[in-house]
Image (cartoon, rainbow, N blue to C red; front, side, top):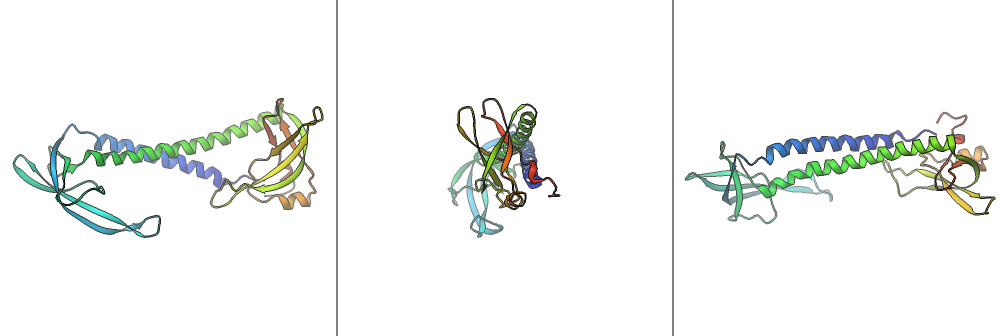
Length: 238
């Protein structure tokens, strides 16, 4: 049975988004966090304009956005410019620590607000780690499957049931797992094996083919195994 291509695509998307955010973050880091040409000063919040933005929050309501204007003095001249962000503790008349660009005094910012730009590389790294981890896990599983089929011990486990793996979802769809049971004739110890994720319910095929057992490849310690589900795809196009 073919694997869910969407599952592979999800990990690739995570990696792609992660790389984009990391790159954006580093580009911003070079421009936003370069304070060599920026002068610290004290400004006063003169106006806060609040309005509803076109985007929505998690509750489906329109988000509130704020434009903050600050007045400050540069070489005896008063300026008023829009700040590069907003904080919940802002109010009109409040004095705050800001900086202005030495070459363009109308351009101002606030170092504490600049830290928000670190969210871009932070989110990017998290997304990148998730995507790369997902891809590596799949690669390692394929390597293990190939190794066990070449060098592992082949046994046949009795088919018990098919279960829905509700702990895992892709596009609101959960995969299925085949559960098998085998008793070691040497010590009569019982082992339970679970197949890899299957994205179409295999119960109909199992019933049609009257499958009672599944091949299972195990290592010498029986702590690594792979349930061979190739029989489900034999003679079928899906």
